[in-house]
Length: 196
Image (cartoon, rainbow, N blue to C red):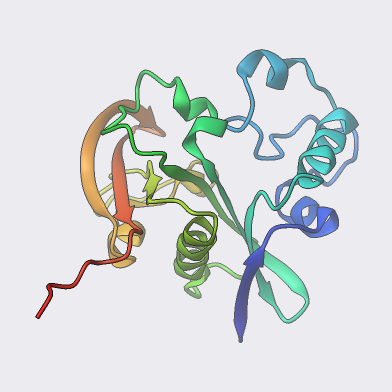
């Protein structure tokens, strides 16, 4: 299997990963952290997909992993200031840098356990770096060796981000599926070399 990670710019491919099986279902569409709760809670059924299509007119909403032409994984990535994490009281702000956030990792059933989540995190790093992010943050579950319900593992796992070079920056008061979430960061700024 050859996995390629690309910006999530195609509506049908985004829909394949985060859209509902039934067009009228009111599933997340990965909007929960992208837009204010009041707006998110008022949308029903096909309104949600139409909203995502409109957002895509302004550019990709993260990255998708492809096995050939088939989208098999998704990672939501955006500037933190453009998400509800900008005002989230449970997840602290470490400093005033214009950081970006990666907050949802999803791999299609049948493709899990093949390292795709790791590839998505790598793709999220490149996407944020290409967008000018000085730092990329994630808010994964700190589950240790405990099993995590796959539905609630969308935030990612601490070990996955550590493997990609993220470092623990702060604890949070956020808990998901019984596991604490931690704030992990990866510095994307070019390294300065000492003058000889």
